[in-house]
Image (tube, rainbow, N blue to C red):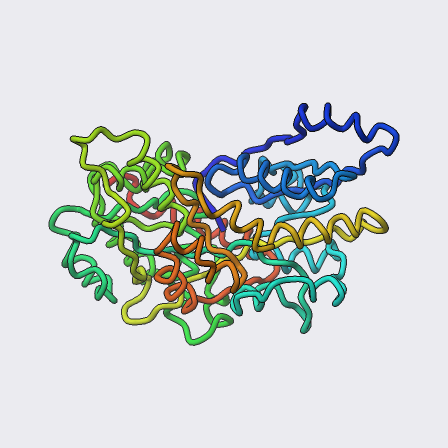
Length: 403
């Protein structure tokens, strides 16, 4: 579940390709409407890469890609992902149960799923309901503690007190603590780490926040530099904290794996030599202690589902597009950067991609990210997005406005 970035929407129908379509004037091209998950580094470029790669091998299809402007909104009037019109939806797992309960997804036949590469077990479990795969995972994410190598002691900081010992003296933690998606996610991860089961954790998601978790969030906020953490403007700039980390505003920050793209991008394109911005060899990864001594963060999986209304030739096109989007060729095109560019560091959902030598050479932190992520848990129940928004609203009201 992403947070902190205003959703984007773009229609990627390229005039040059349409002009080239005159070659196919005698055979009208079919249109496949695909709604992609918007919260990844350089989403338009990624969408164009997928579109061009697929259309290269399927010249009779035009992939019409959009990004939902109100992806996480629980209000039907906002037409969030639950209420959008598309042939293929990219679904955050937080919505999967809602999609299924609304009978909004077409079943995936065994003949189709057999074409897919081997899924990472956690991703496969996230996309399985009733003993069958109901959607096809593409990306995985969870919150990590990303820090500089010179901040010694953080690799073994398995408690909040350990984090305070290292970072409190210089207010060295950068952490976005504003916004419903952000605060709701932290709250869920703290519950999952504290309770004996996911079911027990979910039972505590009520509009009134747990006092012990509120106290813990307040301690986290106290580790931040003055002015950080609770600023709505910084929250809306979703890459703000990672880019501030690149400029050494703090020794560590909390974020998804793909935020390291923003760190490296800031260093590569915006820093002067004398700024001494953070470089790739300096970056380390550890688990963030949402509770002391136990790691079980919320893991989110973004997955492709086919709308229940789709049938016939469009259904075959949808299956073909999804199979391509999670293929080794597509993952390489998205995760191996061009020379001089920074890796996206998105966590793929197939074993082949995670172990691909080209991808690992471009992004050597993948094994560290995966080892931490695999200790997490994926949950999806009806109305989870709306319920987390409700408790996050209360958390936002109760946390100090400024540090």
